[in-house]
Image (tube, rainbow, N blue to C red; front, side, top):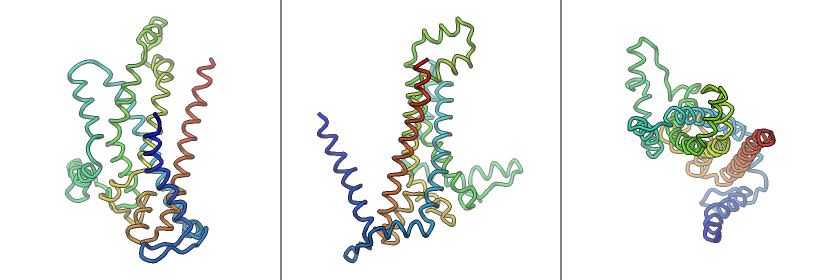
Length: 281
């Protein structure tokens, strides 16, 4: 029963990963035969500082995306977990951003964030506030892209949290209310502990989505200004398709995979460790 899924994973995940590991030990420009360099590609990305720069930018971007998408998704789920056509319409409107393609989202936000004629800049000028160069300032470009990603994926987080909220037995909340617990105490002591599996799932998938970000960077900033938005996936793309450095791109891919694997494992371990004392009590 698992054979079809295992075959797909082996063909599209394990085989490309193994090929990346193999290529990371060679210098190859796609035109001439590969040349063995051993750990030379890893030494180059370490010595140049490229690895640390890409890792720092990716972690910063991912931290913003995960924290705000999880927080806003939970807040929206709690606020919209009600019956009625208005609430259903708002839920659909929020989730609609998630089903739109990344390219369409990037183009929309490029228009909104344009420093000269963008909608946001026009509103700020009307309020006598000096707008920022959202995509051209190295200090704010990465944060801007992160919040564009938050806007897109928050609807997904909201739907997962809504499913978790609707799976909570109403009798538990009613019993807490009869014991004198107010809305805040019911959320902290009843709702939030029961949402831990949903939170772990949303946080993990949001982390993976944020690490896979490419379209929004390619369309909106092309890794600039001055590489301030060159995160891991875009750095790999530049090496392969612009610089023809397959070996260095493969080395970055291997490090990228190990970093994502480690962060995901740490995240899941943290949620399980914090949930264990509650189950024991």
